Length: 319
Image (cartoon, rainbow, N blue to C red):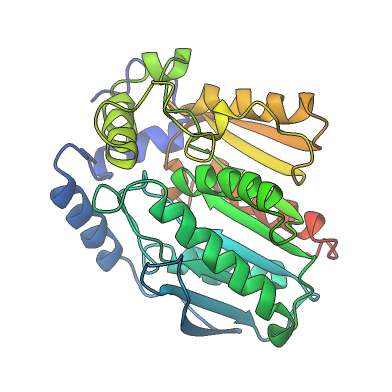
């Protein structure tokens, strides 16, 4: 991997050599790499946030679904955020997103619930999505117990989590399920066809690249399904032909991310369907570059997330 071919932000480029190399063709090793990286980081300061866990009924015939709940000591309003972690449908857990969720709950002033959904390839589509839906239904039904208005819950996901949130919005609309006030889709993974210019071009970018995307979708859908007419829009929301009536959305994309163009296309499709949408392309970035928290562009991204969520949930802007 080299930075010569890509016009990365200088602060990000300087940190690339120390980033983990993620090759999901060896999935056990990739999962171990993420765990090792997490274990090297200091435990987050949970001051001002109370963290608890529950297990809630899963989809019919499936195990219960673990949820982790973050309650700010001083909520900014009766609002909630339902978070779905990333990891290409094949990695990630509650601990991997813990530090970020503490920060979001505290900074936004919202009760945040995050879901530990089943991962592929051990559990292929629709297992993970149905787990996410079951958790969302539980949160909406129990919202008032946590001081949350069930009509003021936003969904929030990054990468595969963004793709799952896009699918959740479709599923909730079509099933007449929980009201979703807003969908925050960070660098969403929404298109199994892998045909966009950025997906074809970015074969060796840091963290995520076309080879990893191939493994991700084949693991999630099953071998030989990706790119065929058998793929459900609930698996790959870019395939949805009717986006009308979905919640307002924010979509972020990174300049040198293979997922860039599918995120842009999905945002434009939402807009064409009459859905209020904000799209932000962060220059000089790559998938997962926000791991380099001290970079100026990463700080901008983090601050914008808080501002977007607070505005979407009709909260004061804060500091």
